[in-house]
Length: 215
Image (cartoon, rainbow, N blue to C red; front, side):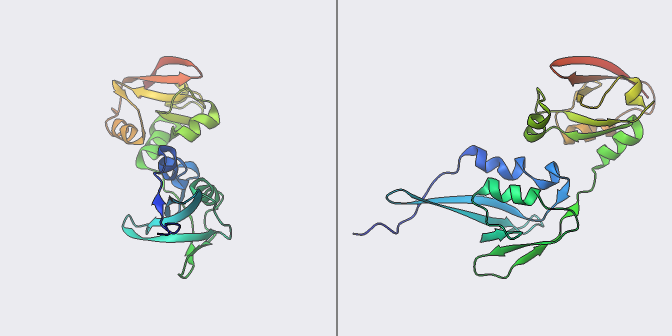
């Protein structure tokens, strides 16, 4: 019989599975875009590969029936990397449309992602602006780690400034507690004492050093 129209699913490699997380606009651009996508590849003999981008989340955390994406902001994504690259080029408060196969276009307006409480507290109490280290951020700045909190600003004469922390440093540990990600950093900030001296471990280039936060 004729098997030319039978579709065989190709397992998506691990990297492509991670693209929605690695290229998440909320992480990379600090933009909330209520759109989650995935890539589905099928092989039709003899060797025809079809790539389809699907919407798999309604933006409110609830799953929705997969919808095939035809265009994003007027551009046709070739694959999942291309789709998220288009999303990363969008701007806060500037609506764009996503077109789906057989359905009405969806208008989306990106919003600035609210700062987590820990980020706000770090600026208020320590005098620093930080963001979580991600693989993309590590590659951008040539960091030797993919964990910790990256320091983007240090307020003059603040607690962090007096401890010797500089923009470009990565905070790895505060007190006895490793700061692996934003969640761990949030816990540490909640339990930071009102007064006292707290050890802080940072990475600067290839070197790791310790200092003290005088609260």
